[in-house]
Every structure is written in structure tokens, then in C-alpha cells.
Image (cartoon, rainbow, N blue to C red; front, side, top):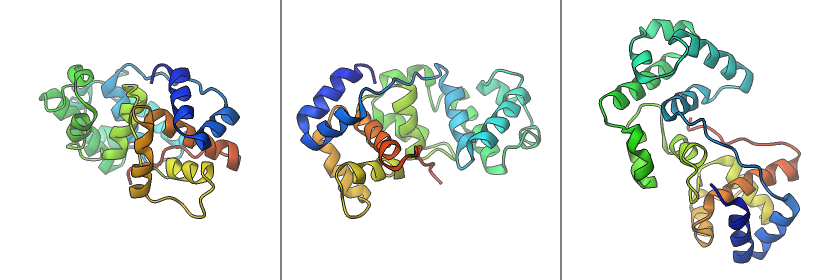
Length: 212
């Protein structure tokens, strides 16, 4: 999502309500990706539906269990019961193992993801047990830095939009999808401002909610 300043200017030009909020919120700080696609996806799976501290502790034990470096080969070399002993649920153990297998056999060509379009990446990642559209969209936004991702099923984005536009009730995903069309090709940045709206207007940050 490079060019945040230019993207914000484009959003502001498109819509006066969003423009007013952008002025209030100020510039956003870029969040760099990990630079390791497999490790980032494995971390996303592990963190689903877990509180931050618990997820962080389990992730550290997971990294230790696979030998300190999270690679498909390292995961596949470890028996499932070892991952379970690190604190992973049965479902998450199966999901991360499924991801490792699909990367290893080329179903998900991590080295080539940069050349694929967003929907193709979502389709491929969704073949992995435990990775749904939301997880794939977060990967597109934060790891691949894709500028035009619009996660309409995310509660934080829906909540933030509702706050920015002073709607009487939480906007539905279908309506949000239509509303977002005018912000192409900068919808990732619009989503970030929606999350920021929750932080500023409610006094708390609602992070992207998980698939489950």
C-alpha cells in the first residue's frame, strides 16, 4: 500500500465525508509485511480467534517446535502431536500442515504470488483448510501490500464505515461492497481509515476479525 499520502488525497477527492474524516485522522503509519509469505500465513492461522497474549505465546512455542524457522519443510517434518503440544488446536495443526503441503507440492506457488491477481490469490489460498476469504484478504493487504482490497465481511471495517457516515445501523456487507466501488483503486486505504475510525470515535481499536 505504498503512496499512502497520494492515496489519501485520492480518497478525499472522491468523497467529502471521507475527506473530513481523513483530515481529522491525519496520516496513517505504514505497516510493513514480514517478508516471509509462508511464515506470515502460518501466523495468521495460528492467531485466529485467540487473544493477543495467548496467541503470541503459542506462536513462540510453535516456532520453537519446528526448529526456529517456519518453513513448509520444517512443519511437515514435525509430527502433529508435537505441534499440539506447543498449544495448537487440532484444527490449527491440520490447517498449518495443509498449508505446508500445498506450498510444498506447488498448489500455492509462494514465489509467484506477486504476479497473480488478487482473486486468483484468494482462490488458491482458500484451498487450504482454515484459510478463508478474510485471511487471504489480510494477507493481500498487509503482506503483499495490495492497494485495492475491500474486506466487506470484516466487522471493524463495517463498524468504521458506519461511524464515519453516521449511519443509524451497522452497514451490511453487500451495501458496503457497493459503497466501496467509488474508492477504487485505493480501497485498502479506505479500509484502514475505517479501522482508524473505530479507534478514534470509540476510544478503542477493533482489529480485523477472524474468519471463524
